[in-house]
Image 1 (cartoon, rainbow, N blue to C red):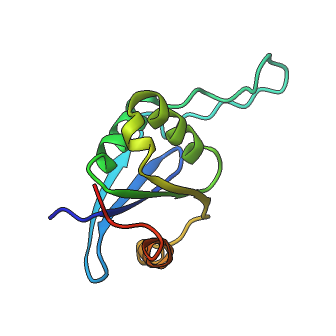
Image 2 (image 1 turned 135 degrees about the horizontal axis):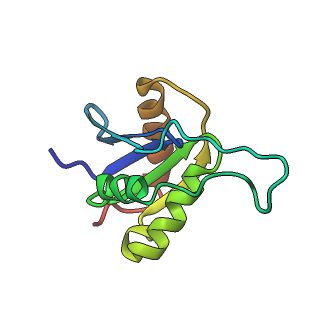
Length: 130
């Protein structure tokens, strides 16, 4: 089933994607191939962090590509890495990103409830046009 709205909660390990309407939600999960890798060296040039998993970002982007409006949420920086990846690789999808917000580690139900609340207010101002 295709829904107009999507929300993606993303961290460096997984992306939980929900396509939803006021009464239903379809869930899809994307896992990073590099979820267990962490590099933190004190005496190195640069941040000491491993670069983002490009395959993971591609899969996450594909999971939301058919949405009419997208909310990206999550802790830390992966949500911003996804936004930049989308901007570079799918500019038309970038235009459908309604917001990028900090959200810690909610349950699936909390993610969908937050997105429904967000889009309920947003939809009053913006028509649902793909």
